[in-house]
Length: 613
Image 1 (cartoon, helix red, strand yellow):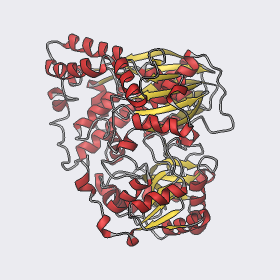
Image 2 (tube, one colour):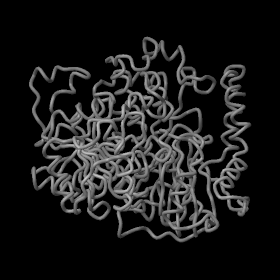
Image 3 (cartoon, one colour):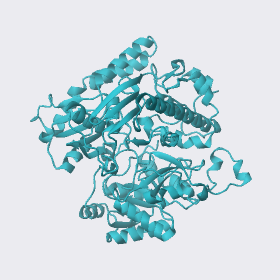
């Protein structure tokens, strides 16, 4: 049984191929088109999935879309009617788009499939639609390593649902509680993202990274005016402060008045107010998530919890949830946002509609294969592509690559690392990564300003050998997807002077906090990725060799891209990034490229080439 899952037409469109219940391939369209958060029909991602599996369109039994457009339109229409005559401008802007493209999405999808594969196949019986949060829940439970689990999904909004609670047992999954639009934890977080001057649907990571620089001074104000949180975690928003139901902005004048002034202008100087707002919304989010988890555990008695939806990418909240020990085990879908809806749509159809038996992957961590589900390139193809791009490179044996790269890391070089299958989801996990020495006190600032071209406060994650994680961090759990935050061990921390302790805000940035300062945030936390030999042997071997050279099993791992650009996919993308940044050493397969050897005429100016949002 071959099922193709698709998410598209909102943001982060993606495709996933499931064969007999196994996730075989998955990729986001942005990686192929180079348009960040591309929402278009994922033609390239679909083509990749089928090519990887060696199948043709007529082999596909079902194509499943990740949500139900009619229910979304119903929500749009009912919301505008409820607030009429307010919101007419927003309604009149949205309606033509819905009438043209979104309302009749079955015909739009059918036309797209015909454009891709021709008219020989009748898709009317093979095209199915899932519900948005059911897709999230299915993506969380069915690939998990659990026979049964409670499932919590949280995001902005699907059709009507913004939060759902479900129970999965075997091949069954039942949603038993929902919170509906406009009451949304994800949209509340996005409202603060907007108010602090960042872009909604992409700036939420920045708020999470900014939070440790502030104090949660506004948390009680938020709870007094914006959100009413019940003991079981259910909540309601006071919509008089928000504009997203009727307008083209997230917040309104009443919101401005509550926090003492207008929103920060894009790209303007960050102030302590923004840092304190970030700390406050993070604290509120953590309170809701923990209360929801306690409520689910109490009502279901389950020992395991699965998470998905955009809010599940909040790794700080996830780390605190883990430390609360409400559940014995927690598993988070690595592509927890809308892209992962493609996986949930396909798996949901396989298990819930077709009633297929489920075998939990007891011999593996889970059913996501480390999230290495994207394209990979043969060595011969790599060399052909790099040569055509004008690159100068030397090809070595696998052992030599490991040795030379580990030595370059130890020498303080910024490394581009392009190996094996590309990751599915928003995190680079050692397939398409930029690497550096975690011991370097200057690496964070250098990578942010000269490689990533982004705000200096943005933290970097550590990749650590799974067998060594408990020695360096206050966690002894698998964290292969970089979705859990843990504190650096006390004996690895550096004591701050009295003068340093008095610093506020961004001034804290330049104070080394531990023996691995490049990955230690200002609150001594780190977004940990545990590296496992079974799922990524090359990456594990590299860190192991680095440990032999330095005594440290921890390196910096950040996504292989610059601000405004998707993570690299092809060898050509990697070479372009080398020539547009201050990366000094690039490894693609078994080929090593040194910046100093390249033709200066091939230099790329990313600041001119991209809208660096």
